[in-house]
Image (cartoon, rainbow, N blue to C red):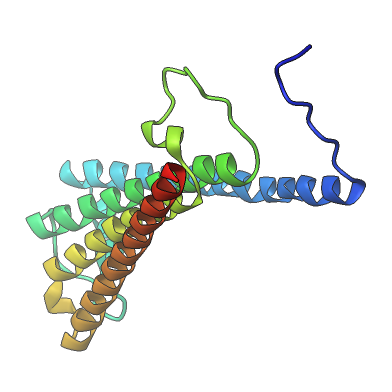
Length: 203
């Protein structure tokens, strides 16, 4: 006699409803394509940065347009990279990397949580956070990633603060604080739920 409990068969309606989770598959495949676009964008910016550092004026023009604030005139007569431009471009590259990390968490964590198991147990490259991922943990990690991305954008704004109006600086700061408070609230709710589950198991 088998020790494993016999799995009850699902009704046709339950089977259809449960199988509907696979409708999300094209969404995750689409995010993978978006990840490819970000990789391409990263390398275009990096190649322009290296070329501009070597004196290529066309690449320098591309970088100045990339870091220019909307509505502000692009610097004219600039013949070489300066520290501010390099810093803004590098922060832009870091921003791309952090958004790519966010995409990975959504693709891998979301698929594992809502669609199907990836069965990465004992795989040497299994992400540490994936071993205990659930919907709540995923929300907390996504919130922290969004805060990191927002921090990069805010830093870029402060470095180039002369190109912004005071109300724009204040608005971006307030938005960042709202993101931070939202992440703290999600993490606090996760803590309360974890404690409630632990107390329920004790009883």
